[in-house]
Image (tube, rainbow, N blue to C red; front, side, top):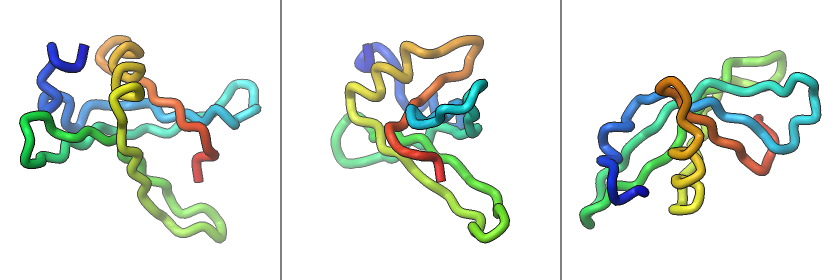
Length: 93
């Protein structure tokens, strides 16, 4: 699947980032976006970036999740109406 798509075209596209540890009903998520990182080989690396606002004692910060091939396949398969979903196996902090 990933060989059929130009990953550079995903730059800046919306990704809904969720945590598998979120037990709330309904679960919460953060709005993130794809970031394409060029490298020396033919295929660029893709990550999902999320910015967290300042919350009480936690300062504003940014997290980046690098996508391996399996994660990339899952994210691309999740596309609905031009947006994607990515689930992390840790808390979103």
